[in-house]
Each structure stands twice: as C-alpha cells, then as structure tokens.
Image 1 (cartoon, rainbow, N blue to C red):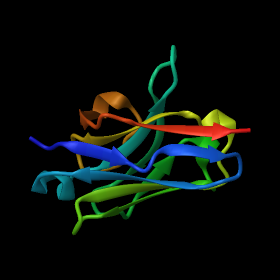
Image 2: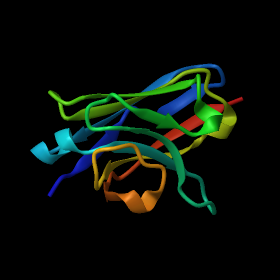
Image 3: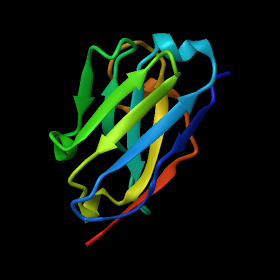
Image 4: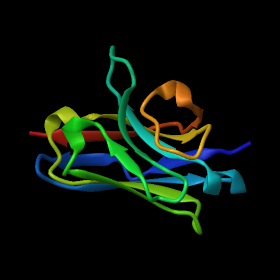
Amino acid sequence: QVQLVESGGGLVQAGGSLRLSCAASGRAFRSLGMGWFRQTPGKEREFVASISWSGGSTRYTDSVKDRFTISRDNAKNTVYLQMNSLKPEDTAVYYCALASGGSVYSHPNEYGVWGQGTQVTVSS
C-alpha cells in the first residue's frame, strides 16, 4: 500500500513562493500519475495540477497556469508543486494524490491514494 506525505506548506505574503513536496512509499509511484488538489472549508476539493508517470505530460487548472509548476523525481519517489506569485485566493489545504493510471487526470475519482494535506496560507 502506497502512502503519501506532504510537506512544505506554511504562511507566505502575497506575491511570494512556496514549494510543496509529496513523498511516496512503494515502487508503484513510478508507474502512476500524480496530482495536487486543494480544499477550503465548505468547498469541494479542487483540482490544481497533474503529472503523468514519466513527467512528460502535465495539466493545470486555469487559475494557476503560468504560476504553478508540477514536477516529479521518480528516483526519489517525490512529486513537487512549485507555487510562485501566490495570491490570497490560493489559501487552502493542499493534498497530493496517486492516480489509478499513468496519465494526467483532473477528477478526484481517478485517484486512489491521498496524503494528509498541508496548509498553505497567503496573506494580503
């Protein structure tokens, strides 16, 4: 059973940057897509970014395009989310997730394993 552990969240001023990391246990990570989602109180979990097993394909929600970059290092079993030009509306708990297939996916139902989440707070 793969387990995911996020890190790198915190408090940052608007315009600043953070890099989230998600470390996975198990070799299955290397053949499966990964995603980042975020959630605020009272709202559904929102897709942020996804990356294919090889890292060759990525997908982003429109609101983070040109600001966030998803990447992965299969040798380290880790996926990253580099977040630049952060805005107060980016404030949320961020979750990484392991997909059931090797491609990029936007829907939470395509993901079978989730991390515990890390809080990102952007002050204005």
